[in-house]
Image 1 (cartoon, rainbow, N blue to C red):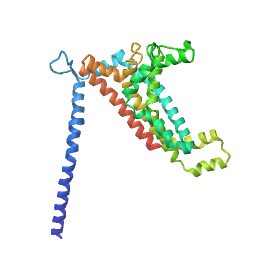
Image 2 (cartoon, rainbow, N blue to C red):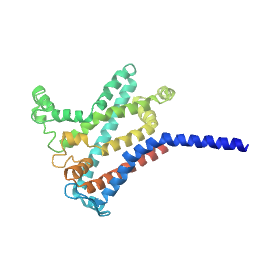
Image 3 (cartoon, rainbow, N blue to C red):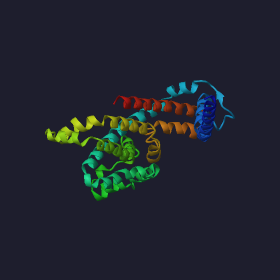
Length: 300
């Protein structure tokens, strides 16, 4: 018996060694590319360090974080991000749901339509942004040309990228166009998971299209709404490419979102310590919303 236990213990130790050997490469990669940069950035956020003028970081404690909440430009960028997030959230959720319902009831052509709706999300966002920047130009943009020369309604032409509120509307529309396909697929998966007998029972009971939608379909998509809703919010908070390439943050700072402000502080003004602090503030906000997503998912 004792010999068997020693043999079993030896096998367990061998398995443990192999387990460590297999896990070690992943742990080393995580340490090099995630854990070390995380703590290095945290330390940098507690220092005053201008890459152009300072030879080494100078520890200043929480001053960068205090400065962030006293920085009117950063506060403005939070406001811009909030406005963008609300508009983007409403449009991408509504658009994704409507398109998913269209696909759900277009039984024979679902695969073709699904490919068409999902296509924008596989196009690089930077390429989409450059294309829309050209389309929305005042003097040689395709949209103003179509309105003035094709439809003959020149009064509807606008300076889409350099006036308010059109600049904000423009980046929201571009972002929704680029990502609504993903929301559509998520909603469609939720619709296809609904029991058919439940929908048929509603029809037998005399439920009309709208009554079926609001009484049967939407209440049973609560989990899908939780996932897609938080995904949309996180996408909105992380927006950077579209405003930086379509409007360049203008006019003025009207479309300068948080990520753009952090980037400028870090890599334009080379305030690496302050930029790191701003980045951590954003990360905390995103993590808080991720935890909210987990709590909502558990409740529904």
